[in-house]
Image (tube, rainbow, N blue to C red):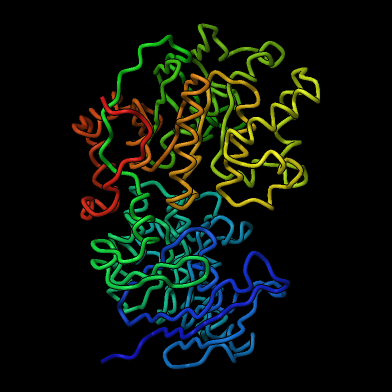
Length: 548
């Protein structure tokens, strides 16, 4: 029997200075065999990423430290190695792919040079041989036109292409162990399917052991050989994929699986109230040609986009990265100016309004972004963030504070927490605060731009229920941007599918999911992970609307 590539035994990582618990992880034991994919799942704070950081000796200095246990890579003990010795291990024998490639890649270095740097550090290859090896590994991860990609900077690539560059960098020296920390969380379903297929191909071709960290059970069902479930720093259950997904023993595992939304939409009562928002032939074009730039690039981000949203209705826009979803949302919120077309908000066209005339309408359209930590000012208390907008529109300070306290209670947080800062809350709590801030303006239209994509499944379910409850309470029209078809199935009354800036299909959610008409829509649905285990995961629906 082959020896494990990775063997973690009774690993404990202590939190310096204490916290909500003494140890980030405690007595963690797991193995990864050659050619095996082990998925580690659990909520935020469960210790998944800390485990991977400990293996790579990337624990933040002064905050976390290994206080006990063993980590062996191909039988070699890592916990006793110095940092210089670990630098020789990282990249050559063990490599890591991070969740957000844009922050992991150097923005001022070309992608090819960043891959070549690994070869320069760990091998004696000359520049010509390094270049050949870089192009070869870029081809192996199916990057189009490797010569051009090698000369590009990270910002010039799509999210999926940047993640492929990260994988190429990780695999260029054929490491025995690959650690993937949420590498597909922010990717749309088709790109996600391509990355998962690529990781499986690399793992089979090179017999690499893979430790894959995720909160997506659809991904687990696609690629895992074995599954490790973590909660509050401890392993609560582990076994084969079939054992964990078909017959989980622990209540915590059962809760995680039950929180996965179903791909089957519930039957909904059609909304027939007045139209709050209507876009008519909305267009947005970036770039352009001029006398000084005759070959300038023109990008049609949105082309003749037309749809309606009624009061109390949720319209979902789904599609791949670059399909124009967020561009349409930003045009409607007038964060960017549309090139042409109409945006009728309660029968008033706001598409071409000047900023002075637009100001009274600003409060009526509010947006909740994907990452609440980036959208909340880290230097301001959450109370200051919530009351800023209403006070700018003339609400007295005392009334604004009272409104903020009421909204904190509405979104499930203590009103006494208004004096705390964003970093003192969890990701799910920060998103609740962002929702409270949007509601403080008393909008008629609420836009959610991927508001739950970065949250784990249990917190995601809570935030979705919150969004739907405030829609009902305030009779809001909701525009919901998402790449997660499971989320769209459960929360949206109607669906609009976008491809390359064009709405290719629209209709009631149940109809579109049951009988997609466009080839692109069918391709999106077929790429959704976890369909093979559909009867085992996502079997329960989020109780958002009453069934007819």
